[in-house]
Length: 194
Image 1 (cartoon, helix red, strand yellow):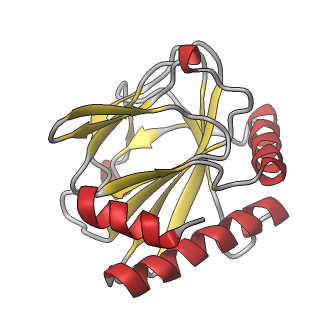
Image 2 (spheres, one colour):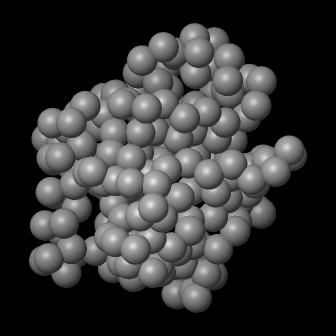
């Protein structure tokens, strides 16, 4: 991982994509864990909003399970360790004040997506950097499920290939998840400040 290249891309463009951020072993372990949670009905239909305003919405069609940072599985602990290295390095280079990471598994059934949105809440600026790590094996461009970033110069699509990490500023970049022709697995997360 070239943290200098990541920091430069974020500073210049507010987003970057890191292929092969997760090795195949970890990508497979996380994907198997996500599927096992889904088989055990531990992934629940996603909602939007927070607190009393949290509600199921037609805006998104995924099922999620939040990570519990105080008692992670072995695969989740490895994921958190890698993400923490990114957090520390970005704080050193970009002075972002990132303190922690909240994350969840997201499983999109075929045909499901997530409409265009920002990741920062209107009344809370804690989320600074959005992160999406993909867990899909043998993904082809024609499978769909791209992350579409809405950038000043037009949309940019990120193919959800296993091991890839997408990072972007939560308050600046609107994005959406396009429907896929097959099941799509990821970890969605947000680096937060106090």
